[in-house]
Picture 1 (cartoon, rainbow, N blue to C red):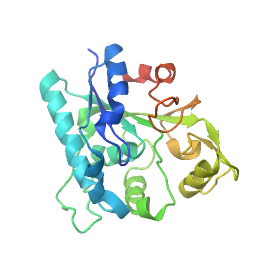
Picture 2 (cartoon, rainbow, N blue to C red; picture 1 turned 120 degrees about the vertical axis):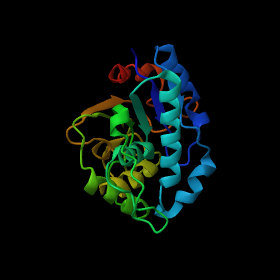
Picture 3 (cartoon, helix red, strand yellow; picture 1 turned 45 degrees about the vertical axis):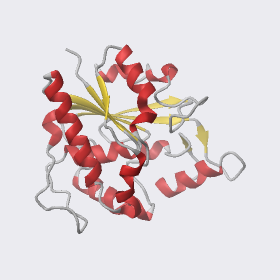
Picture 4 (cartoon, helix red, strand yellow; picture 1 turned 135 degrees about the vertical axis):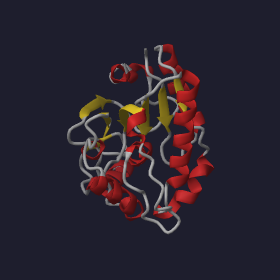
Length: 232
């Protein structure tokens, strides 16, 4: 039986942006659902605040998929910030690092997840607004933390960061993420930050960060075939 897959959108992204990826996976015979986020659902998380509202929607979606399909486990695809948020969702430790977080809230979803596949996820960051959340993730669940979950981390090699027109955004984003701007990445996330020790780490040439018309990204049909096998 092919396990169902749940897509976790990236920061400030809504489910609609992943419609083509969802359909492409369904055409591969993989039942797929995207967490039904809207961009405005991310607003309460701005400024490094709690991502609990996103975690609740992930949990509701995973449970609904399990109920509908009868599957005991699902695969998760976390794009961008969705990848490190998924690592919180897997965890057995209370996510209670903000005043509004309940110390009793523990998601313990590792038993529901077979594979966590991340696409262009900044698993580390030096940016001050994300540092608190990511320090919790990496101190509590370092690397490919759970041996009973398969971790697959996909990085893009599309843009070399540099202080020149066309590469400034990448340079600044890479530097905020890993401390080095002159490196390769997907235009937002450098390769060095997109991988985890102990995971199956992939680098895909020409993969840019986000789904945009006319640009290759992780979910483009030409590139998807390089990682879809890990959902089998």
